[in-house]
Image (cartoon, rainbow, N blue to C red; front, side):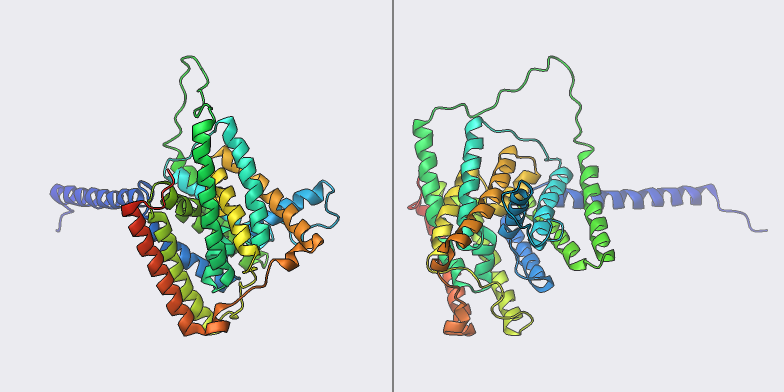
Length: 412
């Protein structure tokens, strides 16, 4: 008669089970640390951002941010009786509004998963600068028919000449903003830190260990909302919320910020973030060319920015505003998501300013004087456009590397 398993076999099975579970647990912890325990390289996030922007282009239409702010501001003015007619769609049915909400949620989830979420207050003057920056960014985006995303990044990716002219405006605005900050440092005497409130010796509970679970719960909630939109026959809208969530996560994990990209070459000479933006644009432009050239989307998609006056002037005003606010339109969203109160102030003011500015430009007829959109391949064909694009990106990267070594454009 055959006996049962011996004691030694049972012990070996237990050891093998524990070893397998320990190995799996170790791999999960390593993956978690890799994703949320350290900052991602900006250039890798730039590539991810380009891929997500191309997916949005094929899913819906070119990625934008300012339209979501405009929707929020317009609804506010309608609800208080300033506007007679409501916006065409509610914030929960407006594509850019949903992607913006996704960016905030993605950054919040990333901050929670990385145990980095914290309510960050700022000195009083910083809130004043947040208000001023929000006003300027709203006006600049109205003039350029887009912010740093739609007016510059996406416009460049769509081969809209307005993206290039806005880029030069953003550079000029960032330079002026840094000149102001230098003057402020020399002439304005303010406290730069906030005094902590005295709570006696009462112990404060540390929720750091629970933050990742809240982050994971938020991720699952976004998936559930996506599914609800799909059940309602609004899969496209739900997808935009989810794509925005991924963009917010990617931007937060790498601190990817266009304000940083335009500021640092003048401030410290560091061109890493701007190089990441240019690498991202190389991927974005190539993918866009394939999509448009093959007529998956029409060649004129996303080309509506006033190249001659509106884009450069709007870029200058927007660039000054984003330096004062401490974040661009997209950066304001993800930094608000990680808990910066100053950026929440800038977010609200930007929405109100953009809606009011856009309405005034249309009613006054000024918008008709800002210029016309220009699709570059219609002027010089697709092949020369791509060659010139990559020559420009390559030259700009070399210029950034040269400035890092020589600091010829550094203001401070």
